[in-house]
Image (cartoon, rainbow, N blue to C red; front, side, top):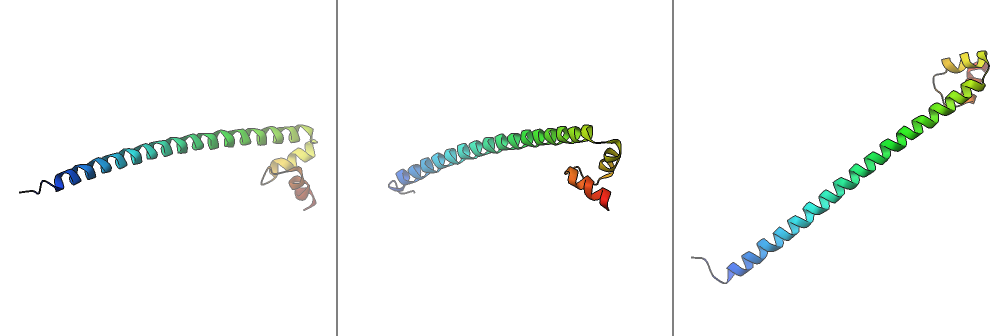
Amino acid sequence: MSDPTTQPDTAKAVEVLAEDNAWLHNTLRDRDARIAELESTVARLVAELDQVKADANAALRARSTPAERDVTDRSPCDCSPDCADDQRSA
């Protein structure tokens, strides 16, 4: 037979564990939502950065002479006009 004095302690422990479990569940849900929000923000910023780089490269190409354009197009990167200058002097 179980001791009747331990039943309230067991019920209280079950209640506390249920509350802790609910709190943890809500905390994890909120954390997952925040992670998804941050991932979305990072993806948006990467897309914006890619667009800015593409626009800057297009502007540089539009301002360059045909010879500079040829060197820039063969450049291993689109980092800056200085890179194209380095390619010409090499």
